[in-house]
Amino acid sequence: MKYLRTITANGYAKRYGDNKTIWQSHIEKELRIIAQKGFTAYYLIAFDLIRFAKKNNYDFVGRGSGANSTVAFCLGITNVDPIELDLYFERFLNEERVTPPDFDIDFSWDNRDVIYEYLFTKYGYDHVCLLGTHVTYKGKSIIRELAKVFGLPKEEIDALVENRKEEIERDHIAKKVIGYANYIVSKELPANISIHAGGVLITEKSIYAYTATEFPPKSLPVSQFEMHAAEDFGIYKFDILSQRGLGHIKETVKHVKRNKGIDIDVHQFKNFKQDEKIKDLMRNSKAMGCFYVESPAMRMLLQKLRCDDYLTLVAASSIIRPGVASSGMMKAYIERFHMTQKGIKYESIHPIMDKLMANTYGVMVYQEDVIKIAHHFGGLTLTEADVLRRGMSGKYRSREEFQRVRDQFFRNCAERKYPQPITDRVWFEIETFAGYSFANGHSASYAVESYQSLFLKAHYPLEFMVGVINNFGGFYRTEFYFHEARMNGARIEAPYINKKASILLLFMMIPFTLASFT
Image (cartoon, rainbow, N blue to C red):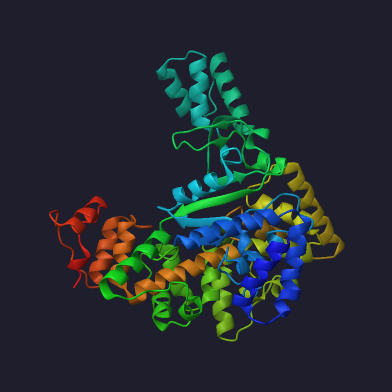
């Protein structure tokens, strides 16, 4: 803990200078909870990993609920200021939380294997493995497997699969197949073991004290249990993920240096927020190729909001999610946003909602909002509120526990004498998040990367489009990025296969060269 405190203080000086107010109000509280919950080593391992990445110029984004931690911000694990956004540290770690959280760290798609290699080399194969996951049976697949066990011919199996939902008379074999299939699906029985999208387990004892491991084609050991069992064993995991957006940024910087001799610092985030060219791209939804903001729905939302600032982009990154949109909260946010801009008052559900979510006009947008509302409006403890949050995100294992907390929420609201329609509406908004909303820190982290992409597109559009295409694009097919490049003045030519540089680009499936841009 002494070392963690020291490196946090060093980072604090760089982030906040001599202002000791934040240290007393946030850092001391976080360090106390980190020590109390036994999370010191976890922070230090993450810090060491980030230090290795920075030393080797591997781009990364620390995101997820870990971005709510001011200590993580000081250590450089995340790049989002929790003070600026008033982020809720208890969403990541609190004294009552019984399940361990984790850091989500994105690396460029072509760097993740090196990160894996570093972790396995530093801590040893006896202490590191990838996290397994259990693939469960689905309706069609389990019917086919069971029908084969009963020896049914292919024609009957196909008919059984196609008519599985129809109420028709079946023979005794078909009834057994359907009955067993429904049972297996309802119990979520595993079909086979697979690999978690990014989970890495690092243990103090040998990993073999907890599990045997498997060696899939990637030749890295994989645990035979999944994330919930890891939590039960008290093993903390790291989510080491990869994305192509960072590849876009990294390659664009390289091309700008080669073409123009300019060294770009993509971490000048404070300056990016004031950049008028970036604001213009957002307001007019000219974000093709830019991380997370290039989809038609997102660009349309940015235009509706006339978005030109960071906080609005953070909110937009979350309200575009299906859970928020399906509940009507996206529509309400847009309406209230414009009403507020014009000085018009809007009708709120309850004053507590407006007080807790002043920055989003009383609309539930982030996962933290569920915890705040459940705790302050519904009178639940932080532990109970976290059960709701986990239930909302689909990570809960006990529907009975979730139902108990739900009943407690309604009892508390009745005791507080809220009108039933208001209670029902608040619960509806909680429930319809349905695992699709983001943590505030997660949205904020994504927004930082969006700003980096927008900066490069605003000032170096041709190099940026080459970076997008060389890293196999984003939301759209490659041909759309070719068209976007042409709109920015590019001339697309056939590859020069007799030139060394062009052969490299041809290998990367890019049928033009940088020299073609005039």
